[in-house]
Length: 253
Image 1 (tube, helix red, strand yellow):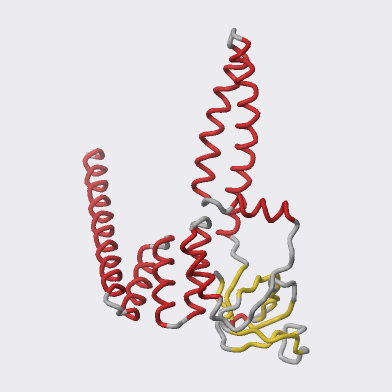
Image 2 (cartoon, helix red, strand yellow):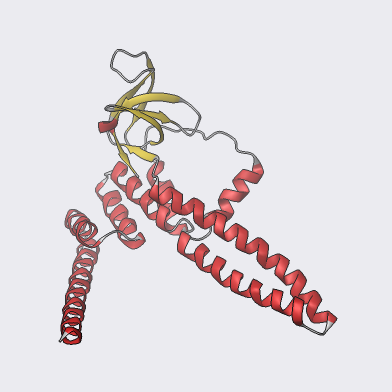
């Protein structure tokens, strides 16, 4: 009887998941159709509904960003392009469209110069996403074990040398792949970047309205949250400027 109940439950779960997948596919198809017909507001509504009901994905954020861009809602477009990049940081199309959207924002903030090794490290890390780095790390580790076996147990010196040098290379790949995957996973879980969603907001020197005015930000600007006190967030700009703004003026990426 227990086995029968387990089978029935499994069948019901399969049916529910199948129906959910079919409904999701139908909604996405409807959104794509609306976008193709230049009904961008309808496409936005459908994509937002899919994200709410079925969870996020790179494709949904990217398509939603495109839909918002077509309607002239640049801050919304930037937000969704940035969210797509968190999932798939190496995608060239998203980065290109994100740069197009940023060109339509008021604030032109020049990022601080980075040490070239740090810049290279981040560029290498963002070539692919966290799942891909994790897969590379696992495959490389398995191959590394094979190289160790070859080095310790092979009777031929040439194979020993090959196993040794290839093992060193694979060991380096394992280290970097795990570090890259860890950093990207950390960014996904602990999101500190945000987009300004108020047409104009003045950053203060302290977390209250009586603080000194420091600088003015406009809709669509990317900031990084460093601290929070009550309804206020301490933000850092890409050029290093620091100030406090109200939490209601930003949306976390």
